[in-house]
Amino acid sequence: MKGRFLKDKLTRLALNMQKGDKGAAEKLYNELVGKTFGFCVSRVRHRHQAEDLTQEIFLKVVDGIQTFDPKIGVFSIWFWQLARNTLTDHYRRARDLSFSDVSETRIETAFIDNPETRVEESLELRRLQEFLKSLPEEDQELFRLHYLADLSYREISKILNKSEGSLRVSVSRLKEKIRKHLK
Image 1 (tube, rainbow, N blue to C red):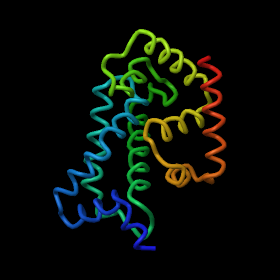
Image 2 (tube, rainbow, N blue to C red):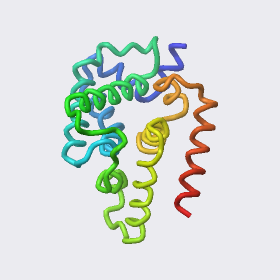
Image 3 (cartoon, one colour):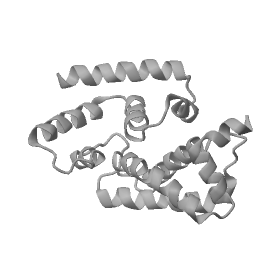
Image 4 (tube, rainbow, N blue to C red):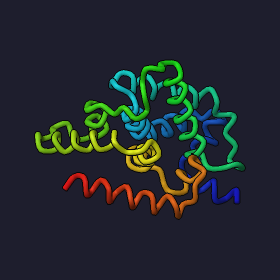
């Protein structure tokens, strides 16, 4: 069992980080910062808030890395649970915001890899944004974890306490809903 966890790149980096390896910490950051920012920007109103939350998450990783135990699970599960909890805390502090409130800026910045977004793509993103707002919170959360954070079904199942099989069905249904809506 231990060998399986050591084969996971992020878990290996986290264990090296626990030992004080600054290079491992930097590699871990580089592996996760883009996905983490995308995850955060999908939930908050402004880019700078997402940047602040991303930074807060990584500071919590540095402060709490010694609590990560590879015998319990892989690092990515530990990390994404910490990220989710950080966002939950953010919303507790700012009660006027809602997880389901996805602004146009938030969706567009989630796809920041393409800075030359054409008008056609922008219109499609607006349609997607409006549609996402209409989905139940559970579907929105699944969308964020699967498509924005790019987590595996195994990782999502541990975070949401659902079977991988039911998540595959849910993602398939969600994908079909999105496809139908965007036609």
